[in-house]
Length: 125
Image (cartoon, rainbow, N blue to C red):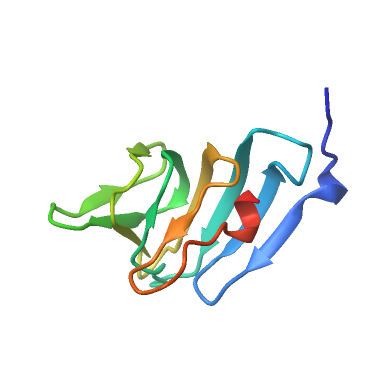
């Protein structure tokens, strides 16, 4: 058993959001990653896919998940969305309220962006 103490969590800041990692392969030795995403009002993540399923639970604010070749999916606090592996998506935070979610997925999963090499994001490494 591993306990990750509150002072040991890892924060990763990008131009689009702040991710706080609570557990991952490199933080607690977990096979899955657990992190929180905080997006400022109107912020938008990059269009990408993941090579593993992710589960997003909205906890504050709101967002729209834009799925390639599908309708936009709005998220409000309390909503949970399961994003299958390989689905191209972009998360756009509510322009007035921003967005906070708790997310879990396979540790070490790769982000797939058109024209770029696959990469393991720091918050799930």
